[in-house]
Amino acid sequence: MNTTLENSYARSTRLAYITTRLVDTPFWSIYNMLPVIIYKELHASPWQLAVMIALKPLVSLLSMYWSAAIDKRRDRLVSNILWARLLGYLPFFFFPFANSPWFFIFSFGLYMMLAVGTVPAWMELLKLNIPNRSRERLFSYTQAFGYMGGGLLPFILGGLLDGYFEAWRWLFPLASLLALTAFCLQKRILVPAAPQAMPCSSSPVGPATLLQLFLKPWANAWRLIARQRKFRYFQLGSMAVGSGLMVIQPALPVFFVDTLKLSYTEIAIALTLCKGLGFAAASPLWAHWIHQKDIFFFSATVAALGCLFPACLMVATWHLLWLYLGYFCYGVMQAGNELLWNMSGPLFAKEGDSSVYTSVNVVAVGLRGCCIPAVGGLVCASCGAGAVMTLSAALCLAATGWFATCRRQSPNVVKIK
Image (cartoon, rainbow, N blue to C red; front, side, top):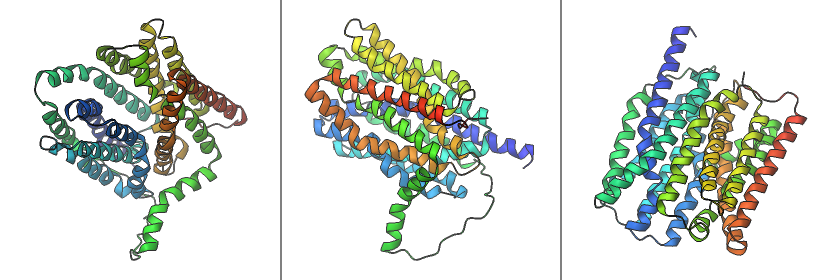
């Protein structure tokens, strides 16, 4: 492939990816407020709120079926993204006319499932069309912008929601329409032809075929985990640190309201502004550092930072400044964690198809979502929020030790060149 053509591939992908992140930011800001909106405006029950919160990780198990369609099929990468965005945003155009909380919960879950389902396609496009160092910088800077926008926009949107009756009903379709303006640029992404044409199956669809389609993503994930020892070690450590970050979530509302007695403003400052500042400040540093260190050392550092978040929360009872410091540290950690989660597929795949690696990451999130939040809720109910935070710190500390051990036992560790 000549240099001019390579530049065309990189330019079309870079422009589409940056534009997508820019126009998605307003939607993500109001999307994250949807549980509060349906509780306040539509009087959703606690059970409905619990279902909504649980959907966020659980839909990852369904997302792998959407991403399975691109396995060894470069010709489907762009269409996979386009159709997911069209279907994901469509329900939000009916928000001005809907009143059932279950419709909003369905819209919330469908969008998250399709958004997560397109991650393998996006990561494969970045791997194919963007050089290594540029790829990580592009991802980190766009993520940083998204977090900063997501941190600042809620204060603006809050004024609109408080000042105008049911303004949220129209903000959702307007934000969805803005997000869909990236469609034309996404459609123009150039995809290199596969080295060999993929054979097309023409077998009739029957019960056996449907069963194969159902089992295919699980079989692909299992074969990959069984075959790739280092990736298997990486997934075990990631499961521990991911569980540590997830188990604490059910305890946070209890801790904020019953222990710290926080106002909505104080919660917004911690959850949006401080976390967003930490993420934005650390993203360029993580993007540079990932080239200098192997993946197990990088992962161990992320896991170690994960220990600081529950530690800061536990001492926040002395002074509220520790809460803000804890969420700033959480933002710093999350910047490295998201870079690692998204880029580990292209990193481990090297010259191969990265979509199946990224799909395993997606499946792992779904598996954690099936049980870890419930564990956190049970521990919180029986032992209190402090016990959950201790458990969270212990899991992150165990992940740190695991990654450090893996690094010592693997002389030829995976590293971005």
